[in-house]
Image 1 (cartoon, helix red, strand yellow):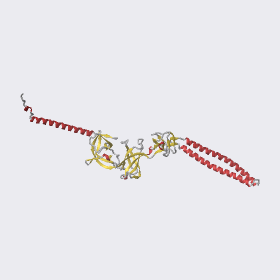
Image 2 (image 1 turned 90 degrees about the horizontal axis):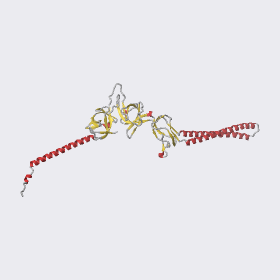
Image 3 (image 1 turned 120 degrees about the vertical axis):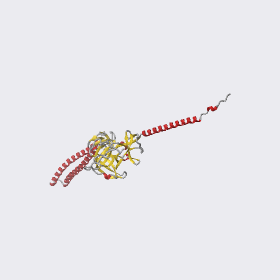
Image 4 (image 1 turned 90 degrees about the vertical axis):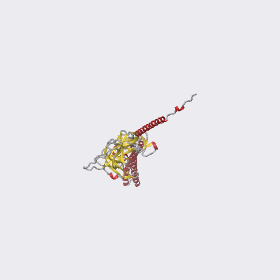
Amino acid sequence: MPVGDLSALRIDDHARKSGGSRWTKLAAFVVAVLVIVAGIIFTVKGRRQEVEVITVHASSPQSGGTTLLNASGYVTPRRRSTIAAKITARVEQIYVEEGMHVSQGQVLAILDRSDYKVRLASAIADRDSANAQLADLEVNLTNAERELRRTQALTAALVNTQQALDTARTLVQSYQARIAQTKRQIQAYVTRVNVAQQDLDNCTVRAPYAGIVVSKDAQRGEMVSPISAGGGFTRTGIATIVDMNSIEVEVDVNESYIARVKDGQPVTSILDAYPDWRIPSHVRTIIPTADRQKATIKVRISFDSLDPRILPDMSVKVSFLDDKVPGKTTAPKLVVPREAVRTDQGSPVVYLLKDGGLERRAVKLGELLGNDQEVLAGLMDGDKVVSKGPEVLRDGQQVNIRQ
C-alpha cells in the first residue's frame, strides 16, 4: 500500500501566529467592553441608589429686625387640669367628649348619689327631731316660769315654804339648761346636714373654668376616686380641660445664650404644622432656674394674638429678634440647621433637593445663631436642604424624604 505524505498537514507558522493574534485582540476587546459596561451600570446604580434624608427649608426669620437666637420647643397651656372627683363613687352620667367646649361651672359628670341622699335624709331627720324637742322644752319652760312667779308670790305672803320656792326655781333652771343643750345639738345636726349636702353636691363634677376637653378619662359605670385606690379598676380623673386662652410656647435656651433674651423681647414663632405662617410673639417670662443636666433655661413666650389653629403640644421653632432701630433696616437673613452644613475639602457645602435628587451647593456662612447657621450666599429663601441623612452624600444621588 502507498504511504501518504503527512507533511502536507502542517499549519504554516505565520498563519498560526496571525490567527492567534486576531483571537487575542477580539477577546481583549470583548473584555474591555464588558468592563466599561459594568462600570457604567455600577455608576448609574450608584447614582440611583436611594437613601432616606430629612429636609428643611432655608428661611428668613423676619425682616425689620436682627435674629439674635433660634430655639425650638412646644406649645403648652398655662392652665391644663385633669378634673377629678372629691369623693370615691361610681360614675352615673358623663356629659363630655373630646373636643367639646365647656363653660365655667358646666356639669361634666354625675356620680352615684344614693348613699349620700340617705345620709342627708338621716341628718335632716335628726335636726328636725331636735327642733321638736326644743319646742317642747320651751313650752315647759314657760309653764315653769309661771309656776315660779306664783310660788314667789305665795312665799312672800308666807303661804308657801322656802323649799317650794327652791323647787320651782330649780325646775326653771333645769329647763333653761336643757334648752341650751338642745340648741347646741341642733347646731351639730345642722352641721351634719351641711356635710351631707356637701357630699351630695360633690357627686356633681363641674368645670372649674372655660376651656376645651382634650381627654375623656372615665366612662359611665367606672369607679372614680381622688386618690389612687383600687388598683387599675379605679379612675382618678373625669376629664382633662385646657384653657385655650392660656396657650404659649415653652422653649429651652442654652445658658450660654440666655443673655440675648429679655422680658418683652419680640419673637417670631413658626409651627412645624404651618411652616409658612410666621406668628408674632414676645417673651413673657424667663424661668429663674437652670437645668443642670441639659445646661438650659426655660423661656415662656406668649402669642401676640391667638388662633384656633394653634393647638397644645404642637412643635414650634422661634427666633428671638433684636428691637428694630429707627431709621435702620436689616436685610433678612437665611438660616438653616447647623447639621445641614457639611464640609467638603475644607469648604462649607449644603445639599439641595432638586427633582428627587441632590445638588451640591457651596455656601458662604455668617453667624452661628443658637442651633441654626446663618447663610450669607449660596441659597435662596425656600430652598430645601438636607438636614439629616447619611454622612456621605453625592451630587445627583436619588433620595427619599423621611417625614
